[in-house]
Image (tube, rainbow, N blue to C red; front, side, top):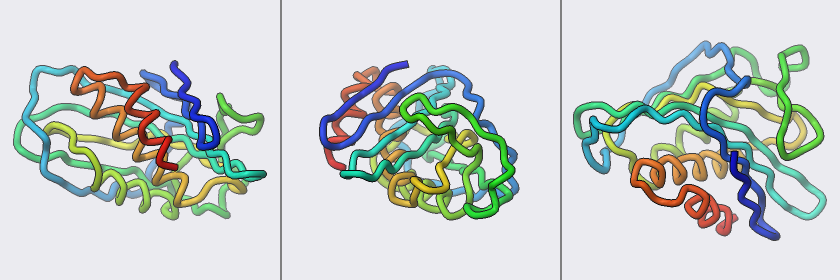
Amino acid sequence: MSVVDVERHGIVAISEGDHEAAYQATEWPQSSRPASATSLSMAPIRLHLEALRRLGGLSPRALIGGQFVPGPGDRTQISVGVAGFGLFGAEDEPTCASRLWNQPFTIGLPSEFARSVARTLGEGPQLPSGMLTIDRAGFDPMNSSEMVFAQTASVLQAVLVARVGGEDADEAARAVVRTW
């Protein structure tokens, strides 16, 4: 795990591998966008990222993760799992620990946040051809928003693009967090 801390903007924890924030999705909206290149020689990459914004007394935060599997063609397919409950219907849902905050996340990605994640991943830097699946997420009913999920998705996307291109993933994350 690496932690990227940008003073007066935010902090992100980037980890490879699996995460306990796997959830049962009831919908899998998909989209497609042009790929940066075709790359069949890379191995799949599984990442998850937790973000904590710094906005005075507020602490917007989000957790998202997924897997990129390279594949043939000239497009990147994007699939975002939507949890079967809404933001305000999650009181009894399982939780997972936060690495950056003292309160746990509720596991899942309600549709309120899934839309902003999907929209963000459909823009920004391009991945090679293949499939990006978002299947890990956690939110804070009080401190999560569409905006912080969109920002977290943009960092996740930048980190994936850096990893695929053999560049410094922490520096890619830092560059995005500086824009917050």
